Image 1 (tube, rainbow, N blue to C red):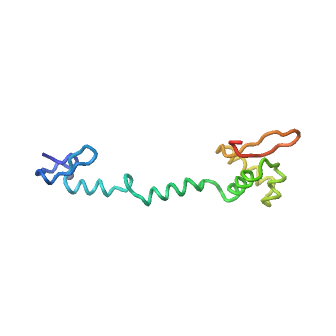
Image 2: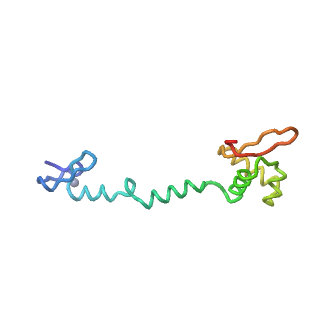
Length: 118
Ligand SMILES: [Zn+2]
């Protein structure tokens, strides 16, 4: 019997089963130590990051929070509430629109902004 990974001769009793392979002790420990398959801290960090929308800037997060709670709002209302310029709003909103987090729609004579799912 040989280790499926490194080819070392194995005595019965020295072999370890992992994911359908027969491994020597060294290879078995290598596989078990590999961080990607079982690393609670990495999984925890990834979940935390996903929940926080890490790709949004602070201004974009504030725009999202505002229209989520108070939307749909006009550009003037958003700029007034967040103390940002119309230019800043347009640049940041374009990113949110591109990420399909927010959208604009026509309401009579005005354009209002809301979350993408609304
Ligand atoms: Zn081995």
